[in-house]
Structure formats: structure tokens, C-alpha cells
Image 1 (cartoon, rainbow, N blue to C red):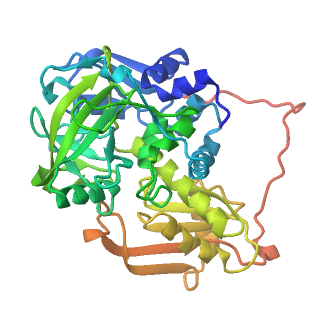
Image 2 (image 1 turned 30 degrees about the vertical axis):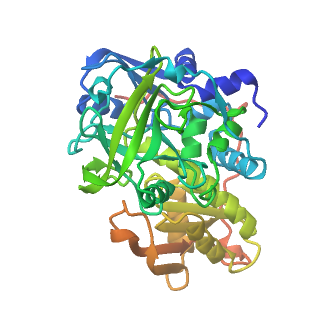
Image 3 (image 1 turned 45 degrees about the vertical axis):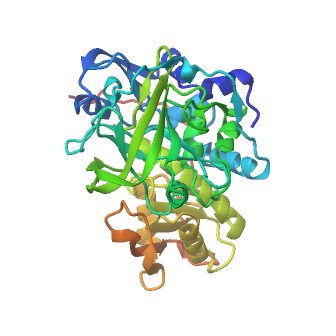
Amino acid sequence: MGRTASQAAQIADLGDIIDWLERHGRLVRVRSEVDPLHQLAGIAARFEGGPRAVLFERVKGSRWPVFTGLYWSRELLAALLQRPASSLPQHVSDCIRTWQQQPLAPVVVGKGRVAEVTEREVDLSLLPVPTHAELDGGPYFDAGVVITKDPQTGIRNSSIQRFQVLGKDRLAVNIDAGRHLELCLAKAAARGEPLAFTLNVGVGPGLHFAAATPAEAAPFGTDELGIAGVFDGRPLELVAGTVSDVEMAADAMFALECELLPGQTHPEGPFAEVTGYYATVAPRPLVRVRRIHHRRRPVFQTIVSGAEVFNSVGLLGEANVLALLQKQVPGVRDVYFSHGGCGFYHAVVQIAQTRAGWAKQALMAAFAAFPPLKMVTVVDDDVDIRNPADVEWAMATRLDPRRGILVVDNVFGHGLNPGFPDYLGSKVGFDATRPCPHTANTTRARIKPAPLDGVQLEMREIER
């Protein structure tokens, strides 16, 4: 993608990223000791969505700092990647498309910084794992990348799951229905074996996005770790595991070597999820942690549910929907997953209509491209899809409720959304476009911009 080696290193290594944020005034350092139980997340939330990430230097009960906020501002992420924020979805889409056409396989190297230190015993209480929301069931890993292998083929798979800490060497994991990790676990269970995996914490956005790429873009049986290589501009480096054949990310801050125990479960939850609701308590797969590796001076990474999830998930969803719609529907210009839709459930599609009917075609194609979507709104190309007021204007003035609303009943959706109990519910699409061909009375009124150069102005200060 045209990156230099120094730029690649900058975005592949979280330590380099933190240094860059510091140099460019985009890092808040919290120097006071904070409690990982609620206080850390409460302070982080005060900076959520802003132009700076946060580094907690002193966390009660641990000798390691905690970092958060890399994804909660698209403007921040765009500055790091040295490109306009509006171009991020297209950039992610281009990276995925490049990987699909020219896979860039990861490489296994002899040494990696993640393995500089191996703890003598497994004790998760040593790690600064925070408890975020008031009713969360305990500390959670929520930003770690899972790397595992298909027990039959040996092909790697990556994903991001939430893991609740249960004890010194025990975790419980939530695996959404239909995820590739679930397929790998089922194959291991059929063989009567545990499923080995590594949990890699503190990684660059390339690996994070590779693990979060929708299955529609990275089908089961493909090693999506290659996406990280395209994103970073160099192959992703892995190091061999010490207790299984599953590798660790060489540049991660921490790597836990773990195994999923088929048939063994433990109550997991509640947890404040992307929906803004608490995920319910239920028996979920039990994990045994067998080794803890880390750098000499690691930084633990966490993600506070909210804008950071909306952006990191939304960018991947937008990229996939945009890529597929531009192939299937003439005139599609852009796609945005709104924060009001949790970055997951509402897509706004911008289209330059070429003939009648294509707006509804875009509705149906968007649902097919990203199954978690619950709502899709299609607007014309004179509407700013990232401005909620502009989208509402289109709906209020261009949506015909009799012809422009598409409801799909009894369809698969995202199980974390309360509207999809047992993953089944209804979806709705809104065609908020003007009639095609356009008529004069649907032409949007515009004010011609006028420069202020040479215009004499007088203004009094506003009284406080």
C-alpha cells in the first residue's frame, strides 16, 4: 500500500504507536494510581471520542500500565495512518481486497519481543485487567486477538472475543453463534481434543482489523492474518508457541497460551457490550491458561465499550459493505455505520441513482453483505451520511412510508442485540432517496458560498 519501512513499524507495534501519540500531543498520561475496578474505565470515559488516547501509568495491584482509546476517534486513527478520516473505510476495504487477490502470508521468526519474559507460574491476577461497567461480572480481556488453527487443516484463524477472568489460570469466553472459533472448537471436540490458541494483547491496528474482518470477506479456511501484513506493509511476524503448535504475535505486548476445553463451561457475564446493554449470564466455554509471556516493559490494552468499539467494528463493516455494494449496485458512493447504531446495526448508504429501483437493491445487498445489520438507510449523494441531521432530513422529506420501507421478518441477526433473541428477529430498510429520474421539485436548495475576503465586518463580543 505504499508504506515505508518506518511507517510500517510505527503502526505494527503498539509501543511505537504510543511513542508517536506522545510526540504529536495525542496522549493523556494519568500519573496517579488508579483502581482497575471501575475507576480506570470511569476516567477513560471522560476522554472518550476525543483527539487523545489515554495511558494509565500506575494501576493498583499491578506493575504494568494500561492503554486505551486508540480507536475511539477516527480523526486520531486517521492522523496515525496519515490519511483523511473520510478515507478510512476505503483504505481498509482496499487492504482486504489486496489480500484477497494477493495473499501476504505471515512469517514465523525465531525471536519476538512478546517472549522476552515468561512468567514462572500462571497468575492472571498479576495483570492489570480492568472491570469496566458497574454491573460487569468481573475483569475482562476485551482487546486481545485470538490466534488458533483448524484442527483438521492447520490453517490459522483469528478473532476478537471477550474473556472473563475466573481465577489464576481460568477464563470463560463468549463465542457468538456462527463464528469461526466455534467451528474450530467443534472440530476439536469431535476429535476429543482441547483447542489450543493464543490470546495476544497490545497489538497494532493491522492485526486488530485482520481479526475483526467479517466472515463474508474472509471465509473460513483462509488465513486472515495476512490482512495485517497488507495493512502494515510487511508480513506479520509470529513466534512459535511453547506448549502447542499455535503461534503468538511477535510484537504483541502480552501473549497467553491457552486451551479451550470441549464440553466444559462456566457461567460468564454480565458484561457491558457494544449494544449499550449488559450481555446476560450463561454457561460458556471454559479456558485454561497454560503460559503467560510478555515484553520486558509491556503495556496492557483494553477497550471501553462505546465509541472505540463503534469505530473499530464499524470501519470493518463499512469496508465490507462498500466493497460488495460497489460490485453489485451501480452508483453506490459511500457507506457509514452510525454510532447511534452501535457501529454494528445501522448502515447509511449513499448512492447516485442511475435508474429507479437501485436504492432498494442497495438495501437488500447491504443486509446480505453484513448479517449483523438491523437497519439500512439509503440516501442520495447530496446527503452527508455522517451527519445525523442530514440523514434525518432525507428521511423526513424523501422517504415514502408506503413504498420506501422494507421489512424482513424471521431473519438471522446479531445475538447480542436484544431485538434478536436466539439470533432471530426482523430487519428494516428505508429508501430515503428522491424519485428517479429526479424532478425539479426534489432538487436540494443550496446557498452559493461567498468569500469574506475584502468584506468589512464589525462584531461585538458576546456578553457572558
